[in-house]
Length: 194
Image (tube, rainbow, N blue to C red; front, side, top):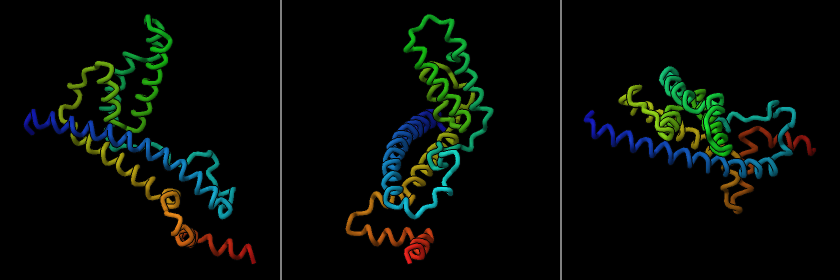
């Protein structure tokens, strides 16, 4: 691929990743509200013992990308050399700067766990770290990031909680019946009432 074209494509994909991250954060907030409403309206149908013992739902997890860990780890090592909390102690920076760097370090570490190439290179870039020697053509990695973010947004928007929250009042009863039927819960409730 031509150098200028590659540069433009990378820039476009990085911007798309930033946009999708923002959309995912917005979708998560809306989903949390949707889940609250759904649990309030359907909670009586669910057995409390069946809930996740850790209190976590997989659906809230960040996407995990299919990107080689060795490349992500290399960039993370460069980030750690610059902002690892142990190294920051000896630098003459304010408490606010220290706290910001520690949070950024934690985010970079989490990004490595998720093999999130786009976020790791974004953090490195923000810190002025030159990553050009790692992967000249990372379009494939950025496209993987776009796909992972789009899939997570689609997953959240495909839940019953999202559907319930976004159903107009005139259709609520019909949708309620469909949800209960698809979960096999309407018969249990009906049997419990007789």
